[in-house]
Image (cartoon, rainbow, N blue to C red; front, side):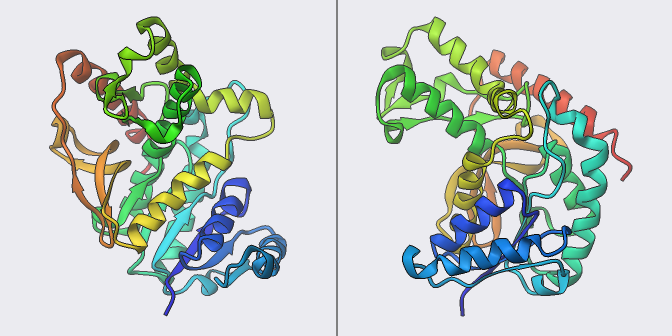
Length: 308
């Protein structure tokens, strides 16, 4: 029997994610949205592409949570997107209500699912899903670090004129302006990045990474990124469904790791069939610890504002 993945929210991120999971034949997919009939049309369009796309995964669109029953993974993308000039944190009031409502309904029908939260502000929204669902911490995880890292790697590839596949990198911390790209752990085929790019250029890439989402919002004007987020989500879904146990930067619940307690925060994790199977702690220098603490404070400030 094929696995079942539900994607809640049929906007650009949700529809792109649903299509990618279907195209890769990772699972059968349910695409849910509250807008009447819209997800049904999108699901049918994707299903009709199967013969030429050479995929047999079944995908349906729906307005009913009943159709999501017994999902193995539920991806929550529902929420309002950013507009130019907005920070992710400015979405907290509206998206908190949406994510809370979605989580309550999803857990009713799929009590054994793993939740992947994508809605912004990411760290506080995955915390919301964790508290509302009552699920163990390993079954609630946020997608952020993979997206931040793929942006970082892309900018390095552009500057160094090398394949993106040759770049190993890590971005930790909150999904926002205080995220922490780890230059010390960044290599090109194992060779330190400093042998390819000047420190001045590296500093510029780090800053561009922190503002990567906002840069796209400024160009789009009416929404936010969706191609790269959907690919990041799909990597998480694949690692879980295939029990690949990839080491990926994700937003996980910390209980003392990195000296941080009781919040969701971006760290390297082992992602497998049980969700977050292990949190990987890396050695930090003093300035890196300070950057992490600054990011923690920003995340905690938003989480403390939630009515939970």
